[in-house]
Length: 168
Image 1 (cartoon, one colour):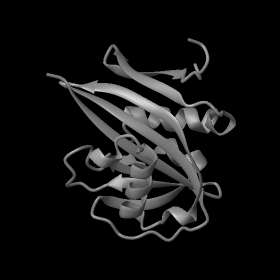
Image 2 (cartoon, helix red, strand yellow):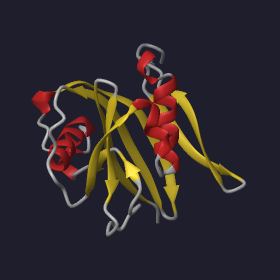
Image 3 (tube, one colour):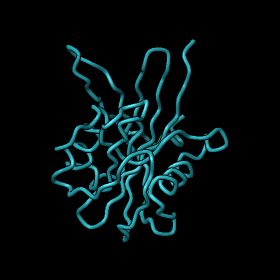
């Protein structure tokens, strides 16, 4: 039977730098890999991924919602891992603080925008950050990314989520 795992990820920007986490070496999933902050959506948050995102930001960075501006859902990524469909809501926002807490999830670093792709990233993180760096700040659409592979190389296919209201 196929199960569903819903997650949220956030990338916060302060001036020209983005907050990334180098995941702890003892983490079960993607140890030592660079990522945004985030985690699993709790069942009471299932219809409010933005609330889950704010909770995860606070838990992993200590940055409260009041210190985050313009947090926007930009990407929804779908991929399959064995008998699991993984649904990831990806948010981008801004903050005026660089103060973060220590977390056992990993280490937090402010990375210049032009150095984001110079790290060991998962394929979906790399493609999301590449797309956002090139087009994301200029777009207003939410994009859905489906992950596939060609010759064992992961590829993300992006498509805008269209507003179909009134088009029945």
